[in-house]
Image (tube, helix red, strand yellow):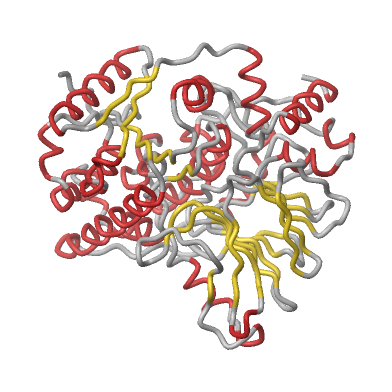
Length: 484
């Protein structure tokens, strides 16, 4: 795809009402968002957001606006509120960034945050970076995707600065790289210093401490409590669809939604192969057994035009296989005025990358990480993977692999794909909360290896859900899938 074709695709997307749920933050007056976007200003900063993306002012004592909370943030009362987010702080001068971050990460959901005071200018991601962001220091701009940033710049040169490598199925641009030579991705656990235009790690600079086996119950209670609060917050705010498969993650979210399950439509996408048949069989059995409203969506045909539309929507930072399900099938068969709730991020507790290395040891280097991530070719990314590895703690190899899952697999692969989903009223995962992430990482290694978390958390949420089989993961080392 040459620069002219890419420019036509991106401009056509904007003219057709694309970039649903995306945003553009700039300190340069020359940036021009799509015409449908709504703009706001603080000092020299302009935030432009698609109408489907909520934006709340962040205020302190006296009513001063010190930033914006962007997206669907669930507060500690289990609400997704409107109106400004008011901080119990006397004024701008009394705002301490450590204090601010503690309150910010008491929130869950899918969000980003702009802090813009005379002293501090920062851009924060949610705990898993599910409202993903890229930035161009030369343009002094942050955006959801490289496509939106290129469109906003109005500079024809930006359309020609995409690299030749295209990500295939399950491939991604790791460690802050993107498909665009002049843009970088902000990783989870980092904020972007908007004065220096550099990322700064603010969490997971050291391993999360693990509890003993005798203390596991406390963490399971925390996971169940927060997951219930998160799931029910979005369902009470919006008519909702919840994805339902044979997997553990969607089963946990179903359990968390027990009290409001009658207000939900559960959906299963048809797909080929044994895994697809198991998903459909188990999801249908769950619906019959528990009286769930269930719809089965046929997979759309993945045509070239659809593939190019999807890749432009996600900024060319991934392949287009998900377009057949979450974009085309969804917009053909579902009510886009509802929310879509998924099991995104649940794989963290299962030690996804633990099963992809030959030996888990403190001496693992970039070669082992490339093998685990299955990234090919290695050459364009060897330096950035090595740099990322230099910036994380090395004494606990299990923690390193978990950190890689959160920052690379989730932050660089899964989260950008969320922009390719059809433009629902909201799109988020209840697992995205620092309290859940901390609790999962704090579980003993032997407990996580035994694989009992799904049943143990569901025992607190909806025990009867475990009467039907749960499909083990398909990564290496997992047991065979159960048969109905």
